[in-house]
Length: 339
Length: 74
Image 1 (tube, each protein chain N blue to C red):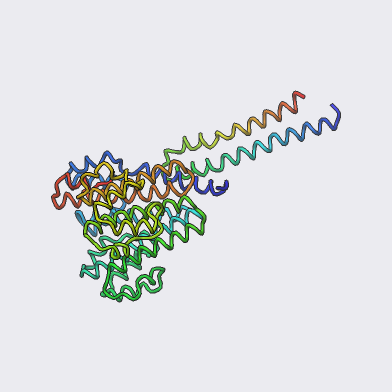
Image 2: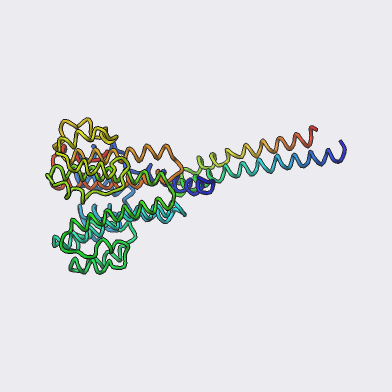
């Protein structure tokens, strides 16, 4: 890394580290579980989310306000990262955050497919990618899936959407594959090996989660393979094909040969709960990002670590509030938290 | 000291100050950028940022000391 590149990363990394120091410490989550929703909301109103809660306070109330404030804060935080970064960092962050475009497209399509109202779809949309809130608002107003796809015809993701024949799962798989193939291409073109390694680890973790879900549902090998994303770091195409054709018990045993095994080794005797496995894998991803960000302090990694940490904070807060709202037992809420 | 010798000493002093200044500048640019980044998020980092930014200045002072020794001791 040249001196000028180090200077550019020094600025954004220091800024991101300062932003990370303002995240809610993990010791707070058990306290939130013991609080009532109004107490949690009050805490949030006095934290980094104050501006968002104040802004949306007139429009929404209760947990809806909470949900929208979290989403707005997440979108604005990610957008800020794009605005304050330069050159390579800016390019890589923009490419990485396109995953939110995929998230939004999937949310809108799922909403239209299941007949959700516009407000319900709005609740889950996060305009952190290249599709702005205004664009998303217009798209959400369209009544049919075909209409939504036509409205997205000018975007990067249209090739994955065209030819929709009623199978939403197929389109979602195509979108995921397209996102990762595009971003790997962009990372390779930029020559940033650290970013590439991070992405390929992320692909591995996504594939592992998908394999666990598919195995538990008893899906066939070919069906499973269709949903897996090529390009992982440890789980190469041959490994994926091998793992996809195994039974659940064989699959779990085969995982011992990969480094990800240590993320779930301590719960290997009780792999009946998918929630536990997915939470462990998410935690592994977060720990991995934090660890490698310390090895390479003036690189894209501390920024990716922050992006991941922020998302996990929002997810945790949402899980706690939604869990409290539906009176879920504390143990179940705790099992869903990544901390 | 003959004029050639005096000239060489002056050039040496200039190089000592110049190169140490460039070195300090190279060190400060990354630290300064990081300090500004941290301060943009939290003004409390002003003191620490300023302190860290001036640390490479010591290199420039070493250069100046070498230059003064060259000019006044020799």
